[in-house]
Amino acid sequence: MAKKKKELRPLSVDIVTIKNQMMAFCEEHSYPNNAETSLVLTCEALRADEINCHRFLCPVDDYYNDKSVDFRKTTSRKVYFSMTNSVAKKLEISNIPLIGTFYYSLLPKLKEKYQKAGYSDELFYDTVDYLRSKMYNGYRVFGTWGIFEEPDFSKIFTMEQFGFGRISFSVEKSPVAAEIDGHKIARGQKVIFCHFPTIDMPTPEECKDSFLRAYQFFRKDFDTDNICFVCTSWMLYPIHKDFIEETHPVRTIMDCFRLVHQKEMRGNPDYWYIFKRFYKKNDKEDLFIDAPLEIKYNEYIKSGHSMGRGTGIFFCNGKDFIL
Image (cartoon, rainbow, N blue to C red; front, top):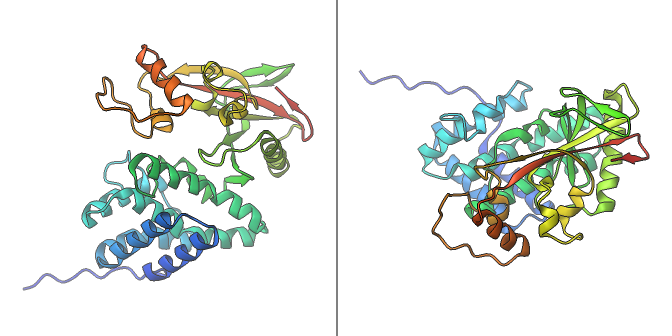
């Protein structure tokens, strides 16, 4: 007797509608043609496989029906056989554009959530533009438009992370204890965390404007007028001051914060930000580099040093910045 085919759970979403919505979004916001094509071709690959398309759409359907979604188990590259990794293997495609497709498929529902909360379209588009930076990183490192980074930005979809201008912000617990001019922050205390894009980095004026807008938005979450802003990033590692000119975008970010902690990262996990590929000890492949930061970093690492990360803070009272 033939085995009875398992019935698939009914879904309120379909891959054709999702594809059309993504195409419209990419065209409206002037995404590179290759980025749009990557998402479209991924949708077509899903459409050709009913079972795996259904598996992909189940957490999308959950999100559209206001059910919780475990983004780490859905899209993380570090979780063994996460949904997107498993489906990509079955479809024999890269999971990088598949992860990108998953997050972009949620945008119409997220926009609806913004509208219900009374948030502006400007806030929505500023917030989700952070995904464009993640998509571009996939292209820089792997040559394909999609997302490969860990899903820390999934707080965008739970409406805990918001963008103001080019910078993204979320309320987090401080990873450090520090003091500036009598203003103190304790480890574990609530702070506004700053997430910077890797493309179209903000000018000093844009940084200030974003910080002030974030202050006003999150002010209700704090019981003090002097709110601490925190950033932990490879960009804040102080060696850059020996590498690059004061007008470099990285220096712009550094100048926004008071450095309070630094750590050398022996495995160079942020190597790809500079060289567009992951670090390998004793790598024999030639690096095709010409930018001053690349040249300086190459010399620095070959001389036995490692990249690092810095944690910086400043306090803001809605008008003034204390750093």
